[in-house]
Image (cartoon, rainbow, N blue to C red; front, side, top):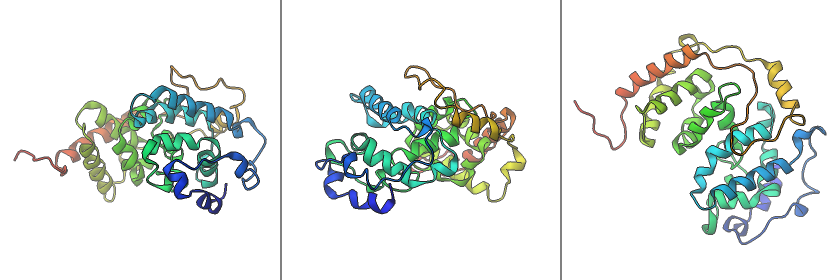
Length: 273
């Protein structure tokens, strides 16, 4: 769905939840899929987000992020170029699962930002989860994604920082969080800010080199979507086997980030002299 069509559809009534959206209203304006493969079938995504809502209906909607992100990435198999296309995310939010967007981002109070339906990659309801899974997965292992998406500061702030594009940096920061050295949201923001600032003078690619990812394996995984089993609800699926992050590189940066964090200012925290 083109951005202009989406913008016109997101009325105050839609944001407040009392004006319903329906696919029939947009079907003539929605763009055609790039090909006829099973990966463009919207029904598995609709079923997945419905299950996420059912599972977390009685708890905080934010808790659904860690469950949904890896399974959305597994179900909706895209290249990064395709995932950068906002028209796809507009369609999912406005035609496939508008009720989920309302539930996740507003409930009875309505959605505060139209960007949750159609907006920047790190704000849009489904785009942000797909990109979180893409940036924080360790090859086919989605366990780090659960850690990242279980902390809203990582999703809301850290994911936008350039250093996260380097896979060992992303895994190093998560290891710092899992170790307990960085616990609170303010800790996460301080550690990530210090690490991102240091990246201006320290070349992380040289300090902690990444392995070359297997583009062919990724392509095979993307186009095998029709042959693979649907995402399991009780266990994590297996992502593309395009290469894991080198363990030593992730550990090197985790140690380095820990050193930086010791001197990093944390809002509201008084450090001992």
